[in-house]
Image 1 (cartoon, rainbow over the protein chains, first blue to last red):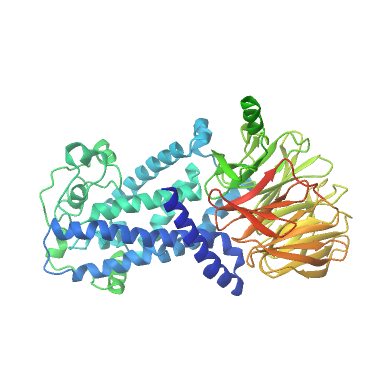
Image 2: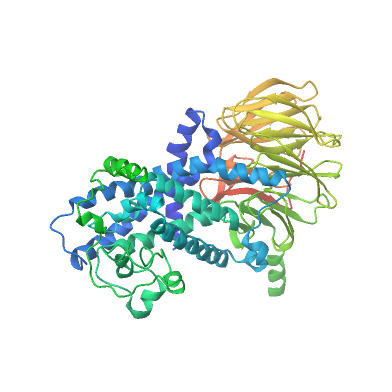
Amino acid sequence: MNDIVAAFAALHGALFENAVLPALFALGLMDFSEPAFDATEFVLIGLIQIGAVYVLLRPLEAWFPAEPWADRKAVRVDVLYTFLHRIGLVPIAVYALLRPLVDGTDEMLRALGYIPPGVEDAIPALHDSPFLTFVVYLLVLDFADYWRHRLQHRWGLWWALHSLHHSQRQLSFWADDRNHLLDDVIEGLWFSAIAFMIGVGPEQFVAAVMLIRFVESLSHGNVRFGFGRWGERLLVSPRFHRTHHAIGVGHEGRRYGCNFATLLPLWDIVFGSANFSYRGMATGITDQLGGRDYGESFLAQQWLGLKRLAGRA
Amino acid sequence: MAIWLVADSAAAEIAIVLNSGEGTVSVVDMGARKERSRIPIGKEPHHLMATPDDKHLIVANAVSNNLVFLDPATGQVVKRIEKISDPYQIGYSPDRKYFVSASLRLNQTDIYEAETFNLLKRIPTPKAPSHIAFNAASSLTFITLQHTDQVAAIDLATQQIRWTIKVGPVPAGIWMTPDDRHLLVGLTGADGVEVIDWRKPAVVARIITGKGAHNFLAMGDKRHVLVTNRVENSVAIVDQQSLKVVEKFPVPGGPDCMELTRDGRELWVTSRWKRQLTVVDMASKKIVAQIPVGRSPHGVYFRGHAPRQ
């Protein structure tokens, strides 16, 4: 493990030192050298993650598909979404947009004498255990994400954007980043607010995002297995999440759907939205059966999302 | 004999390194040139300094909003002071009356009463107040403003900004020469150090040290100061009387903070991009060790350091 970390650190350092830093210096952007160091790492991890997920899940999708497909043409646009996210373009743009807002709010509060507390203020023992602190952060972020996702289905305007994610009828491990860009900004704002409120450190935030992304890739996979009776209740599985994407189930009934959890089905169980009765249904949105168009290309999908938001599509 | 060896090992000099990107402190056995342990410390520890009585080492955890006091002999946590807002860089005034904390992320400089850590004033200092220096009389503290390319002088008694002046791009480290005459400012966005006559105040000279000039450390002879060049990957030695570079040598990995042994024989430098502590033999200027530590190592300290001037 140490050798892997050391090899990654060497790659990260070399890339930053020999390519990114000289470019920043030449462009007069040395103000951003430290965020750029983190961003370089984020991009590298994203690329490694894409490779790892592909190697793990592509064979499984071929050997044990939940749905057999004649071709994978519809999946291609999701590959674009994945690269836009994982090589950092979308997250870095969202970060650049939101960081001044978060820091500005923080600055204003402190000028008034208020320092936002962290979870360590409530549980001092966490000072000595970064791992436990990380677990607490992960639980809070996952809980918040459950409610964000639930509201995406509950509120019509938000669903106008989020329905883009659900419009993929060939659901694969590439689909988890298929989102409207405006929805990405809202998600960034949501996570930033939660992270700000509980005092998540930047490195723990990145680690949490990476873990969540890995599980999301897995849970979107076109594979027909679950984690067993108890495993299904511990971690979101492809079966569990496929039910969330199922036509007539995922966005219907019980106030617009079921199985909203990202990591832990616990939240669905506690708040009455769990559905463990996977029946191998087709994925998509019911109104697609009536011919509603969500777009095939990236630009068409983004444009139609805005039109739905305006009530014109 | 065995008992003596154990005792000797326990008393071995340690270097303490802040791994700013993972919230830990590396305790490095200086003799063995090996990390002995890694201790959780808090979120984003960037800078550290000894208390004026040298009994403790203060680690400033920017995101945790606290100061952690360590035993400098063992690296063990002794106590924490909470509710110190975003302490990025910290410093005591020479008369020990004031404790100053620069909040880089939040554009504020806090002046505390050093004895009690009671906040006297939170002063807006946009943007990105970074490093701190003082004049000998302890009447002024000087802060580099990294994002507006300025240096600000704050009157410690009134806690008002006395003046700001424009300097070169991305000023970071700031250093008062031992004669209390000049401030040296490391320009991380340029290739050297600017010299400020702070009484005027005006920039009076520029010393080319290397791309990405960043931070300073005295060599203990009241004459020479070391400057890290973070982009060029080098360290320059500047004569503070002639204001000229007298020597320069390579240090890899984005050299940042430094510590020099009391005998002047070894320079220990954090190599920020490489997760390493680089040890340079100062006679030959050759690298004699590269010690793996944590992510984004920043501040470094050991007790047996050279005098601070």
